[in-house]
Image (cartoon, rainbow, N blue to C red; front, side, top):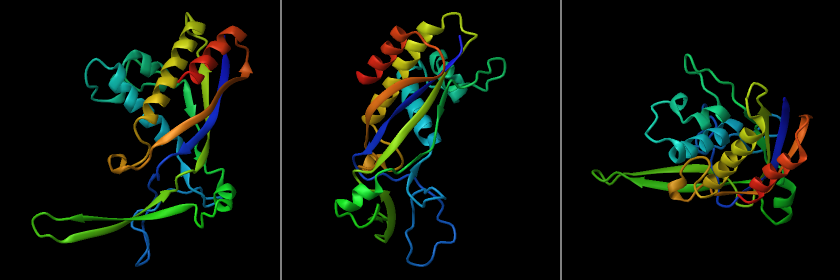
Length: 224
């Protein structure tokens, strides 16, 4: 059995989100910490690696019986989905997460938002010297939306691919739920990066999957 299932949806930014880009060669007075942007459109983006890495980190707290020194030491259920480079236990990742670019820039402007990003001014105080350290952090604004696009590949070497498929989707859905109650990007403890996943759906794009099994996968996503 070999197939690829596409998981789509919408990531909605609930509080300003900062996923940092390069601030090299910034002009005097420029933002200290800009967001990462798509080179073709200059719109804010969410790297697939940021989403996938945060999901795996949160799931590791849920599934690992003890702290894993490296991701390769995660629980077998996680390495099955996210992969492993451990010698003697190399596994290819079943989950591919694409980079996501802002899709509702025009909608935000129609709402009267002048800029698709905002600059938040922050200040830290040295407790010994009382010297202030002001900084400017750029964030994708609340209400920004990004199209989620993930591909799950069914492993044709598995002895029980259908049951593993449903179990893997349950873990993926759990990772998305954990992320909704955490944050994406930086400075989450200061209120940044709360997100919500909407309109989740799974469709077979290559190969064939039993309709009843696919329905179970979609039910799992929708009950997240």
